[in-house]
Length: 507
Image 1 (cartoon, one colour):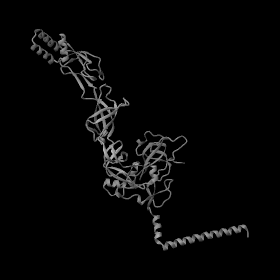
Image 2 (cartoon, one colour; image 1 turned 180 degrees about the vertical axis):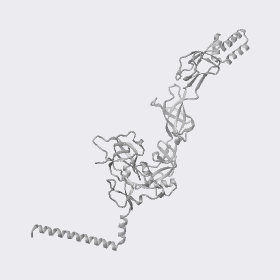
Image 3 (tube, one colour; image 1 turned 90 degrees about the vertical axis):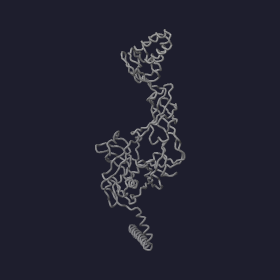
Image 4 (tube, rainbow, N blue to C red; image 1 turned 45 degrees about the vertical axis):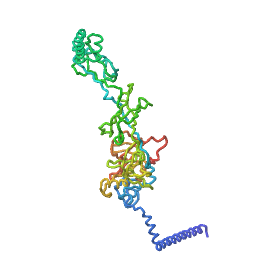
């Protein structure tokens, strides 16, 4: 017998043996299923543990398919939609790998003392209570105006203008005549007449000492400060009561502090304030709260707190900025949570509570004071619980919002129209066109979509300001019945030369 015939005979024998063994195993498995139906049903239940409702293309989610396979629209596999992904529950389950890729960070609810100080910013202004107004005491003429201009710094007693006052001349002459007569009662009456004519007490004393008629009056600044207004010119005729000048003193200044309305609780007049000015690095100025002004700023949602700072050397000038620390009564032994973890919807405050094994549930909380990046929790959480502090955009997903929106709108969860999820990926702008952005992107892991190059429409053209072809970006897109569009875009640092991000699409 030839060697070739021997090989053929052995190969045929081996095939028959394998077939017989396979048939025997299949028969045994069938018999086991007949004699042990419970085992067979358990296997079937395990295989159908997650029921698939339909398959869809993440790029065109409005199209549904009964069988898996490749999308007829894009070069990618269809993605299953499971029955347990919807429902009335507001809880959501997220795969651990997706949680890591999305940068979700958990923080614990702690118990401790709420910071008893508040950091804010402010600016120096004039003390409106320290103002001197210089007026003409009687009619006269301006003979001379000294070299002054608004915003000049003046010393107390600095001359402003020389005034000729004719009414004072006759009153002074009458006083001199009565002084020579030696009648003290008439002399006192003459002195009173000088005062009633408007002569300052210092000028009356000078006239009495010298015995010489003073026809000119040199108007001086009664206080040291800033000349705010000068309303005299040489040759002007003045009436009694005309304003000559306005001076704002600098013995003290006001520090106007903008305090967020949510953090103004616990501030009262008289509390100590520390101020640090960039103009005087390293120095800490002490002051006190003078008043909490009654009107809030609607645009910035802040209250104005007025602080008084002493300024004996005059170096504090209005317009300077300051970093301010305001003392408040300390809150001890309270529940605290980083403020960044709180989601404020306008009607309520929510946090995403981590329940373990990738499950998250929205919880409504009642908030107290906020300070130093922490917020007091009055109701809704317990010490030691974990909440999401970053990556809260996952709350936009269909599963997490279903229960929340149903409660907000007062409708059954199945009837609520849900906002599509926001999905993120990194990539590079290939070009900006009239109808969108040509983007080479990495995989959208929450969509199951691989990296590729394609054109994305943009929700708002203003999002593209400052971007150009070649920029590396992170984008957030939503997929709805009309397709996908970019709703968020931000710059990424350029990749080192010769390297590329593993998020970018590979050819």
